[in-house]
Image 1 (tube, rainbow, N blue to C red):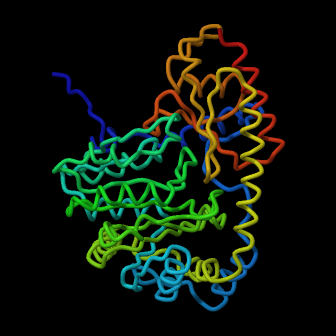
Image 2 (image 1 turned 90 degrees about the horizontal axis):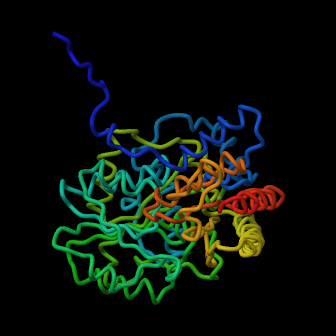
Image 3 (image 1 turned 180 degrees about the horizontal axis):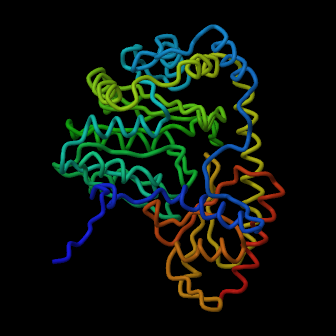
Length: 402
């Protein structure tokens, strides 16, 4: 009698979607290893180095012996600095015991979903969304509910859509502004209308991902937690990766109602404990010292955005809007669906991005991974020369489709 061998891997991991951004980056590396000149525009990583004064603070912390465990929610000095930052930049009032520092904003979001969601709880996710949101919700036993806004709405969900989507099972509303993947920024009046809708449902909490706060071209960032309707039910998530070019430092943080902050620290204590100690010391400097390098990065990203939009708008059939933050464009490729080149047929955004990787040697991320089939994400966190070359290759590859 033969025995069918089953996978030793758990069903929850087998069912989990792989991160599309990491997958496309890996496919690009594999193609590059074969000798091809691949331009990777798939990862959301600033191409700038961490500012020198932040690196110097980390070196000093090492010399001073900050190499031991930190408290699970983070060094008190950093939590105090986060409180100062929240009040200074966002008009949000927190005490240090409401702050939890984690190994990146991704872990902060994971902690929150584990702390807030019971099996079957619904999470309204503004779509297009960052690829990991949906999977983090599922890992916590929650049910993701996409609320979609396309290019015709600048990818911004309205208060009416939120009102229509909320049910008695809704526990959290999750979104980012500035948004990954679209670069859209919710304005004060838009957030206030959404806050007023959520405020009518006393058991619904808001998770506001503001990791791209400092890469905002509108002139003013607004946090939804400033509105009275949801002030006591909003958790604000942020970190150091994007605005300070500190992706590899792995530091994020939340400001939350005390009970939720304690729950996140409890969960984190069983997963990673405290974040990197000397990196936390450097993070204090990042928040409280000279912000000029961050502002200069923002200015450079704005120049690149304008250049990229100008070039993309020259491509017939490609639809682009004007993103107001982050460092992404999110073109609509519906005009290319059903077209083909040789044996390749473009039936969806996955087909489109694989075609671009193999034909143009440009790594992009398919929109389906962001809850938006028929689009793709392109990062412009690359040099002007790389961006010009990449878009020229994309244009030539599109000309071959018929």
